[in-house]
Structures are given as structure tokens and as C-alpha cells.
Image 1 (cartoon, rainbow, N blue to C red):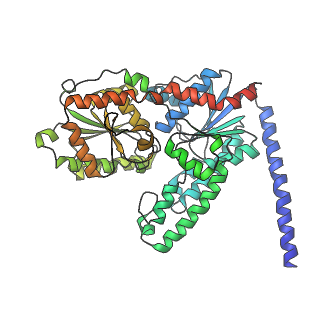
Image 2 (image 1 turned 180 degrees about the vertical axis):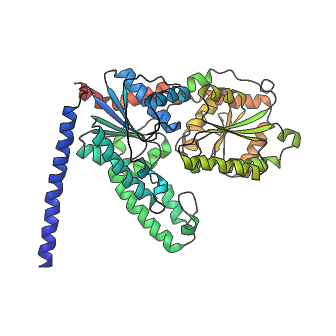
Image 3 (image 1 turned 60 degrees about the vertical axis):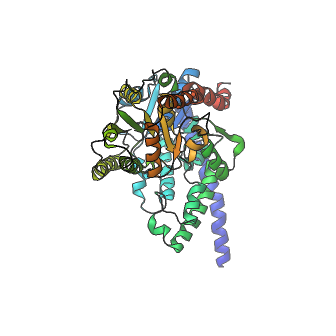
Length: 474
């Protein structure tokens, strides 16, 4: 009897679920036919479109490319920035990224963004945020049904929703996989990191349970991610992980993110005397935990012990960045407190949400660029510093090592490091380097960044996305 009941329940599920999905899809199809916009509608899913980071630069580069090539396309941006008016968002885009976006664009404000915040899920964070993205995606789909759906933040769990229920063509631009084989290795080797708490790393049973959870999550993540018809990734590192997890290499395209190399490479290279004899070290990074600002401060602390006092008085670390939310603001204040704890407050400056013109000025005045994120997916700020003529020291992992920094003699365009002592030693080496040797590295660095330009990104993006627009136009 129990077997019969169970069988009936299973049959009901297999019958009722398809009927529900078909009915749901028909509802969205009706919404699409009733909307006032008869041209192609592209929906860009970017809940943090006003944050001002590298991911947002990609978003606005995509918008600019579509508006230039397909002026009749109607663009909708799904955002959770409820307290910002559309005009303010577009003004900030022009000020921070130097993109002049046409006003033929609509912002759909989402009220459920908190469900993708990591702070909502102290445990099972990846799963919680992924399920939260589905809930947020349902709100987006209910608010506006597009023809083409492009996710530019990596919310892969929304792809089946927009594809099978919304009836949309789905494309993605992935900066960083939600889960990677490197994260699995950290759990397996019981290495503590910002994605693997110390209490778990120290306990073999908790580590085994987390490893099983990660593997199961990876299987689901691979399935939902591969529902996208076009998969774009931003670096060789990301491409390798996405191909391993999503297993769809034939529809995966590596498109380096856009960097403002044209304007930055046109800036004149100041010599040491023209820089007022100051030694300015610049970091451009949002105040997020993975950017690892504490490592920069520890490197400065180590540097003080290996340079002469008169040299130390000339050194300044300029931390330029933005804050996405209150947690980031607290994090920035913590960094200010840490700099005081290390007695570095006279040598460290914090600059938050500065305009593009001031950023250019800081890059011109600086000599060294600093980057400390482990497994950075790409590193737009690294390319920007190199284009401006800075000598960059980046973390020896991820995209910077795979795609950007070359350390071989004769073609060296920067340096790689991992520990604070190593960063400090390289900074001291650059400071004491012969001016001609510094100039050679800066020149090689500038010559190596043209492949990361806005123009190359626009060309590759439009080439990759052409099948979506061509079919709709026909």
C-alpha cells in the first residue's frame, strides 16, 4: 500500500510540475507580447550596478557596445540600488568610468537584494546566496520580461529560470566562479582562508562534511551554469575553472574585461624629479575582504624595517576604492585602525569614491601599483596601473599570473609576490633600481596592455553575441 501511495505521489509530481512550468512560461510569454517595447529587449542582471568596481565597468562597457552597434535595442538593467536615481547612476558611470551612456535605458529596481547578501547566511553561504538569487530573479522576471538575458555578476542559478520559464536567450559574463577547484583544495588540505573558516579547517569531520557539501553544490552549479547559451569569461584562470565545473568548453569564450588603456597610455610619463621626489604606491580595489588590504599594510610595516628612515618619510601608500555597503565601510574603518596600530597612519592615505579625473592624477603621481588579492580572476586595476606607467607588484596567482604579469628577463612588465616580506623586498628593490631599468619595465608594461582595451572588448563581445541579435533582427 505504501509503495502504491509513493508511486502515485511521484507520478503526480512528474505530471503536475511540467504543467506548472508550461503554465508559468505561457504567462511570461503573454507579458512579453503585451509590453509596449516591440524592439529587442536586453535585460542585464546586475543588482549592484552603482558600486563602481571592475564588474560595473564591464556592465557599462556592454551597455555602450550594444547602444553603439544596435541603436534600436531597448536595454533594461535590473538593480537593487533603491536609494539612487537613474540619472545619478548614469552620472556616476560617466564620472568613474568615462562612459557616456545614452538615456534610452530603463532601470528595474529590485527590493529583494538582501537575499543575495552573504551576511544573510552565516552558514551554507554559497547555497543561501544561490537560492536567494533565484528569489531575486523571480522578482526581476515578474517586473520585466526581456528577450535576451545577460547576467554580468555570476548568478548562475537564475539561468534556468529565465531560459525555461521566461523563454529568454541566456548569456553570461562570469568574473569569478561561485565555487572553484581551488576552494575544494583548500577544504581538502584544511587550509584556513576567507572561504574556509579556521574552526572548520582545524576539524577533520567538519572539513569532510564541507567537502561533501562543496562537491554536491559544484554539481548543481555546473548544471545551472551550463544552461547559458553563450558563456563569456574574463581570464584564462576563470575559463579553466568554468570549463572544469560547467563542462561546456565549446560555448565558452574568453573575453578580457575592458580597461581604459587608450587614455591612460596617452598620459605623459613623469620622471622621479617631476613627481616631487615622493614615492607613491597606489592600490585600486574595492574594500572587500578578498582584496586583502591587511596584506598591503603588513607589507608597508615590513618595508619600514628595510629602508632608511629618510627614504621611509617619502613613501606613501594610497588606497583608492569604493564601498558597496555598510559592511565595506566598516571594513575600510578597520583598515584605518590597523594602519594606526602599525604606526603607518602618516604614510597611508584612504581615498573613497574619487572622480575619474582625480584617479588619473593619482596614477600620474605614483611610481608603484600594488595588488594583493589571492586568485584575482583578472585584475582591471593592475592593467590600468601598467597603462599609466606604474611598476606593478601583483599576487602570484589567478589572472594576474596567467594573463597579465610577465616576469621573465627581457619581457618583464611587473613583479609577482605572495607574502608581506616578499612584497616589501620587491618595493625596496624597485625604489633602489637604476632609473633606466625602471623606465624599461614601465615601457614594456605599457606596450603589453593594448590587448585589454575598450575597443578589443567591444569587438569581441559583439562578435560573440551576434547570433542572439542577428536571429531577432531577422
